[in-house]
Amino acid sequence: MKKTIPILALCLACAPRVFAQEPVPTVPVVVTNGEAVIIVAPDRAFVTVAAESRSRNSADAQRQNAEAMTAVMAKLVQAGIQKDAIRTLAYDLQPEFDYANGRQTLRGYVARNSIELRLDDMSRVGPVLDAAGGGGATSIGGIRFDLRNRDMVEREALRQAVADARARADAAAAGAGRTIDRVIRIQEDSVPEIPRPMMRMAAAEQMPATPITPSTVEIRARVTLTAALK
Image 1 (tube, rainbow, N blue to C red):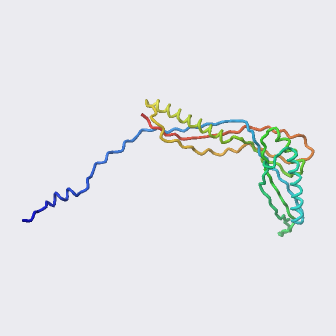
Image 2 (tube, helix red, strand yellow; image 1 turned 45 degrees about the vertical axis):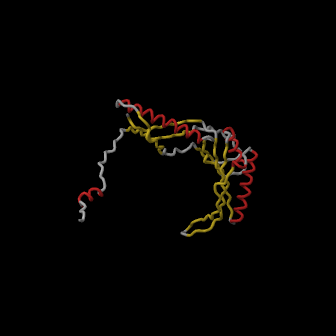
Image 3 (cartoon, rainbow, N blue to C red; image 1 turned 60 degrees about the vertical axis):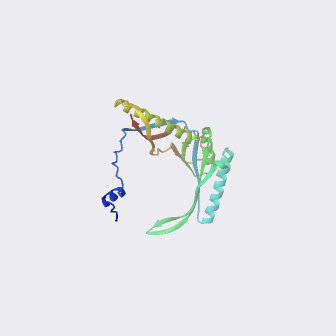
């Protein structure tokens, strides 16, 4: 006699098991912002120095410019600027035109050489400016002040910003009758770039010593902190 296998029982045995999913518990959180500002005196300065030469002939303009910048750099080295503290920013040779009666006429060529100086002694900024002007620089400007240990100060500002955000989170939790269980996330927020202190001046011959008074440098940090409550 053939045995009959209960089809219904077999289907039930082969069917996948379905488990009821429990809802994921939501953790109450608090989100706060923290900010820190550190104001320090600068200990580094950058100065842009340029030499400009003009001639009817392009090659002559280049030659004159090379001679002018060589003289400027010689004066800077005499003033104590190390060669590794000088870098070229730009060099260009461009034609210049006169315009009259709807027509342009070639006037000549202008050659420009711009360099940037790094100074780590604030007391030397004024004398260096005077040396550049005395050496034949046609423009001196874009003086900006900065910090040699900027990275370290930025990290300290970040630490203070996180501490500020955590203190605000503790205060918010206490106001709600709770306490902070754990910090879930810390996000460093972008801070709008604040123009660093700058000044501009025109080079001049036979001028008295240039007085320079550096302003302060501000380092800012902002964070967003998310913490779980208990």
